[in-house]
Image (cartoon, rainbow, N blue to C red; front, side):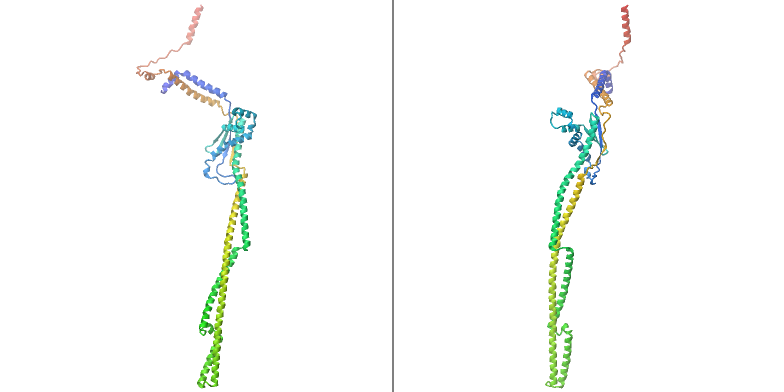
Length: 469
């Protein structure tokens, strides 16, 4: 079917098409006038989802931002918010509402839940595509009521939003209160152990004491090295003095021995001179010989005394070296004990520092959670509160009539086409070719003559006049 055939069909079925269009428009007009008017109130919210907490100033992770708007919309349309609205407006206490609830549900369930479900069916949340503004719209028959419900949804949502942020902080505060008590007890116990350890070991400043004892150990080590050197030198001199006292430099350096050696030399020279002049039995020779023997005896005695003296000095140095060594060993033991004490005290000190850091961190987190738990701030603000609408949102008579005209035209065309399909007629030469399957030799352009209504009336009037005559 082409356009020309459709136009021919519409022309032929114009009465049915016009009746269909008129019926559609009249029906839409009647329904629009019968339907009670519906009012719509809208409150606007600004969702600040930049991720900055107004209390702590902390940033929200970036991956949570895309779902922020959807989450807030789900909260607004939640059963919890609807129940809060029912309670804030005291809708469940109305006798008319209770009667309607009993009629609809037969008394099953609760009025609050029934009203909350009804409110959720009429609430509509529309987020903006290019901004963070969300419109909360509620529809109803009373303009004041729809505005009150829309504003109640916004208010209860803001309260619930704050509560959802505050409740976890309150639970965290209770948890941190228990933790801070445990951390305080641990800190006090660690401090007590450290103080007791210092008192038992008499520690005031282990580092200063260790430095003093370490310096003393170094001094004793130096003294031991010096004593060992002196002992080695004294031992060598002792061996030389005992083995060959005449060759010992310590013995030779003695003034008494040098004087005795000089006197002995003079006496021997005198004895030799006398021996050349006198006989050995001569009294002078015997006297000189006796003097030489005496000097030799004194020299040997002095050499023995000098060797003994050198040996005594070596013995003294040996005893001193042993004493220094014993003092050094004792000092080493003391320093090692101090090192052990310092290590144990370092462990206790580190435990105390760890306990202090844990207590400080817990205390800081407790303070923060307390502030967050007491905060009533939210990152959502009311942009425009709902006001009672002046005109109803539905029905819109003019728009409905325009739509009914368009729908009527579509239905009129459909009725005309359906009527033509049920009662097929030849409307043009193309229809004849399509139906009879024969070629068309010619087309007679014939039009029915117009009816002369006025001439017929005149003829009937003349006939009546003739009859009357």
